[in-house]
Length: 302
Ligand SMILES: NC(=O)c1ccc[n+]([C@@H]2O[C@H](COP(=O)([O-])OP(=O)(O)OC[C@H]3O[C@@H](n4cnc5c(N)ncnc54)[C@H](O)[C@@H]3O)[C@@H](O)[C@H]2O)c1
Image 1 (tube, rainbow, N blue to C red):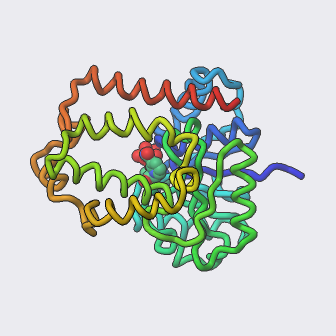
Image 2 (cartoon, rainbow, N blue to C red; image 1 turned 135 degrees about the vertical axis):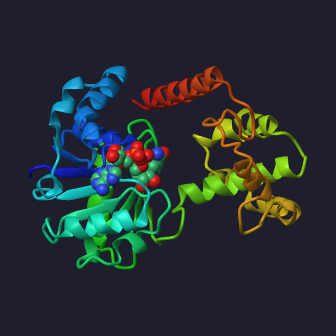
């Protein structure tokens, strides 16, 4: 059987990384971007990543930059969109793409948080439309959440799960199209409490991060919370929840503390201060530390 032909829409941070994963997996990948400069550099960016990762650099040759959307998707069996996080833009793109592809070509959006139902609701063949939520950088973080809507066929889900497993990713099926899917719901439940601890003066921002990194963060990569609950006992977990949950942050909107940071222009790395102050050197060091950690984790799995 011939390998499915892939088309990636948007060659930015996520799109070039997604194209790289499929190309390294041996798939032919057409890449479209509306910005010529992004398209012009996409193969070089992929080659540089592959060199850095000590992977087969020639894989970039399977990536074909295409400046015309119709040409990029016409032959594709699978199209994944990684254009900016803008609902109207994504709706327009998929409406146009649907006019160029076969009725059974799978259409996937890599949106971070926009419900797939809203992006794909206007399509004629909604049974082949779904979400695939990759994590940054796509070639270092294994997970891809595969999100079905009420219209998505089981065949489209199965094909997408198998496709991502075949290129070494860890696909996770999200059965209901809820905001934040699975990963970002869990992540931001933790972040809400993290902000609240600082807001209530229980500790400062650095201490929140230290507590996570030096304690359960160490275990999280190999021990999920529900495995952990079973390990310590569901009865103990219930007792802990009875005591702790009534005091844990449960407000339904963003924290006023976070809103004030943004209003004061404390935007994090981009302004030099957010929850904490960051020099350019500290920013670079933290980014390098994360990349080193993710590379080591991936290498350890091989
Ligand atoms: N950055 C992350 O950590 C992350 C993680 C998961 C999902 N996402 C999601 O992935 C998508 C892409 O994010 P990104 O970080 O790669 O953004 P990005 O800005 O780096 O890349 C977007 C690319 O789309 C191109 N583009 C703009 N308009 C277009 C159009 N009409 N047609 C085709 N291409 C167009 C831009 O030129 C750019 O190259 C977003 O929906 C984002 O929310 C991002």
